[in-house]
Amino acid sequence: MLGNILMELLLGAFSGVLLSLFFSFGPAFFSLLQTSIHYGYKRAAPFAFGVFVADFFIVFLMLTVLKNVNMYGVLHDPWVASIAGIVILAMGIYTLFKRPSRIEMSEDGTEVQMPNVEKRRYVFIRGFLLNFVNPLIWIYWVSMIALMLGETGASSSEVYVFFAGLLGATLSLDLIKCKTASLFHRIITDRVLLIINRVVGVILIVFAFYVVFSMVLFHSDPDAQQLNNFIEGIHIGHNL
Image (cartoon, rainbow, N blue to C red; front, side, top):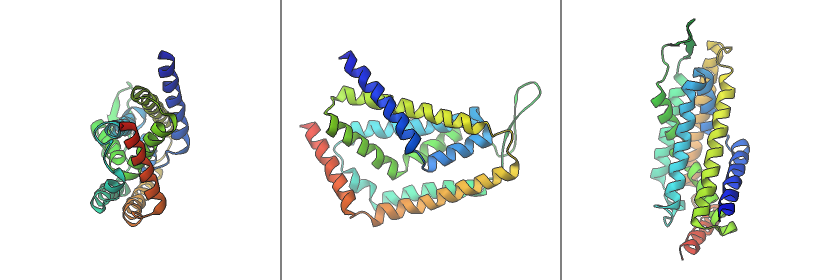
């Protein structure tokens, strides 16, 4: 029993590393890099924790409260897609017009907060919202859960352990990305910071429209419907 749990934990951690390295280039990734370059590691790390908490809540809800809900229909609902698009669009516009801001260090090693620097709690909330309202993230986790339950036949406890390892590894990799990007904090000029803001802002705005159109226009896409039928079948079989 203990061996199976340990194996699931390691498998989850390994999967988290692979997924974080090859399938994490969404809006949260670019915002994480932008925040790290602007503020440095200590001020940007809450963004990574915000993304992690959003992932945790989504996975928890999928495994418990929403396990029998038709998530395909919910996520492709025009109202849900529109609200998600509006939130991401607002973040994109905010980033696009945000002026360069930094955290500088004084000679005695204390932080000197420059104008327009976000507080840590706002950085955390931004990371949480950007991930939580993204319907594609929900579809990603629903698909992962369906594959885990369908292909491995794992017990409920093993599924929880697997996703604990996966989420832990994803958070660790995000913190490493945050630390790596923060190394450029002291050497990048305000002009480059402004360009980064505009690039990331445009990415978020484009992604907001993509979310709305992909969720609404492709609601009847045969491949997507087939995935939904597969997911529903897994849930039904797992609950019998």
